Length: 282
Figure 1 (cartoon, rainbow, N blue to C red):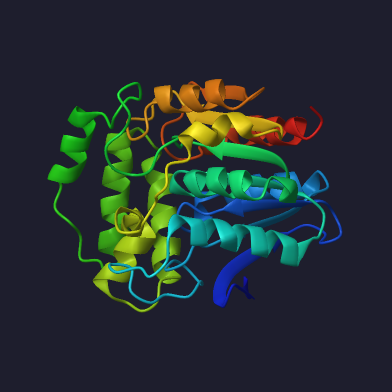
Figure 2 (figure 1 turned 120 degrees about the horizontal axis):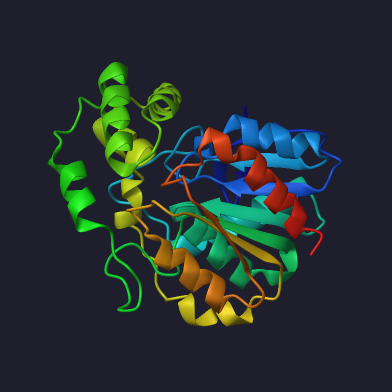
């Protein structure tokens, strides 16, 4: 683990592999731990310098006031550009997961020459909030179950881990994997306050930041190889969101993981690694 300052902000980063190899930059959704260790290690072993990082207000990155962020989605995109260029002047493979996938889309659109490939996992082409009529909204039955559960004591690691495991079971993710990841996220969260833990565990900051203007209508201008990966069982951003991305980004490849939901499952690491590396050859 390390930090790097860009745009006047300290971002938490972790590197895998040789820093002389081509860069693959993984945007957290919202923390870097959304990208599993095994996937980072496998891609690095194949000859890539893999760097995953925490968004602002998460993990080792600067944390100020997640409930009242002073930055916008465009600022997060600018962070990604500056971080990539500070790590390697060559165009990088950019990847984003969940809300990090929204950051990745805007980043690639705003700085097309800085990136050689784009991977989007479990995300959608519009900001948090009401969706376009042609896009599927969150599965209301599943969301009802998820949000009917009581909130944990966010300052208690075991309570947060237990809550994450329960939520994963509802969403169709692996509860054991979710418990482990939530514990690691909790341990990296500072200060030990409710808003900061919620920003790290739930990405709640994305309900607060300014995500305007829209970017969906610009997706047709992307000219870099793009891979869209989506879990077939995802009830949070249902599959139709990934399908829309793949339709609207020229030449994009869609990889549907039949046994996946919102998180990257351990059993899909090899398939995802192969697809991401194969994208660079397309």
